[in-house]
Image (cartoon, rainbow, N blue to C red; front, side, top):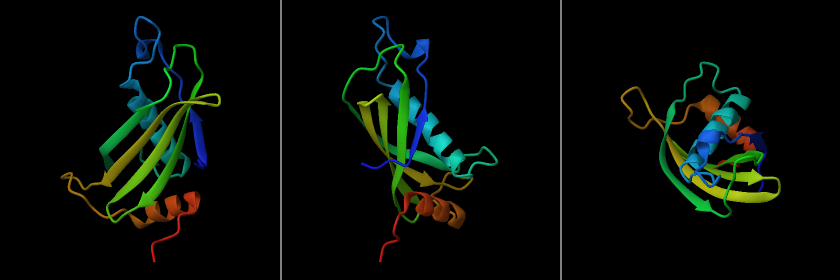
Amino acid sequence: MLYRFVTEVPLRWVDVDSEGVVNNAVYLSLVEQARFLYFEHLGLLADRKVPFVLAEATVRFLRPGRLGMRTEVAVAVRSLGNTSFRMAYEVRCGIEVLAEVQAALVFVDGALRPRPIPDDWRQAIAAFEELVPPA
């Protein structure tokens, strides 16, 4: 799978258990940080506010992460809907994939009701990911 954005997201001492293995819940924090950096890279978070919420996430654990590993997260938007979009991630250490994550996110208004994806976001994401609009 092609990822156009990859960023280092370091592990912290607090992220591991007494055996030095990364806690399963930490993977969602790693991808959350990478997601923020992805949209910041696209210039869409100038106000540092995130206008969407996480609706669903699925994590597939492939190898245990350990303290001291240099971890990076590959990030991609895979599809754009009317109010929601789907993202894919790989948490990696070198060439080894530690976990794969799929997520659905929904743009919301101030009352947390779904709202259409803003045109500037849609255009920036589609251009960066080379997404072809549905026919």
